[in-house]
Length: 141
Image (cartoon, rainbow, N blue to C red; front, side):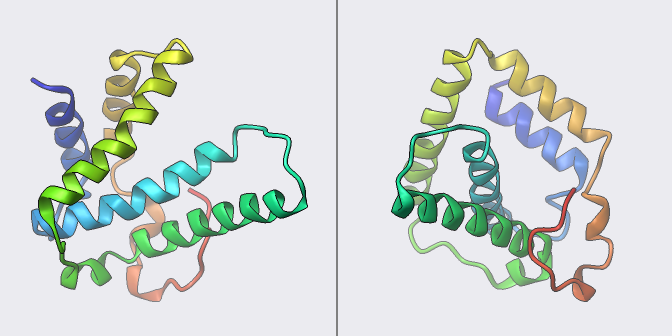
């Protein structure tokens, strides 16, 4: 089984695809990627001037809001993709640097697969039970 198929199967086993079309699920994953990239960016240090520090805070805020949007699964029921092939290309552009960074840090496909498999037991994030009642961005998992 290919890496993408194995990871998708793990996410499906967690319950994150339930009730969504493949297109709706894909849009939701774009939002999830923004959340995760923001969290990863928070783990690195760069010498930043004042204006760049504002940028760091904007990235953090965007990631927190992406989490809020991701948690509202109902909003994805009307989600659409304007250009499927272009989105696939852009998502590859997102994945490639992430895979390169994992490799540069000594990680491997096994680390990625192990993370996806380990997350199955967690299921859907516990605070997603009351989707309609939440209105607070940046909640902790």
